Image (tube, rainbow, N blue to C red; front, side, top):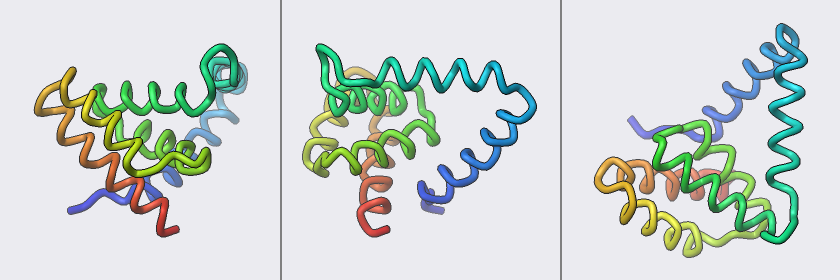
Length: 114
């Protein structure tokens, strides 16, 4: 069965909100780190999101793929740019990375058709 990355991100968002109620300090810390690390600096936000996507693919994290592809789509990344980054993931991560690299393109298509 094909993964639905829009649903995956909705489900995760629902339960991270719940976690935020139960462990607010930890979640504030996490989101503060995410905001700071991904902000434009010497490296632009789009490049940082590409790095995050690559890590998500090589770590086999469906949620990471969904959230970072969505962010990249919102930042104007093209399917071709994502494919090029995915080629690096396959180069560095082999067959398992290829499976998740294909999923990253599936996620891009799903967020493009939303």
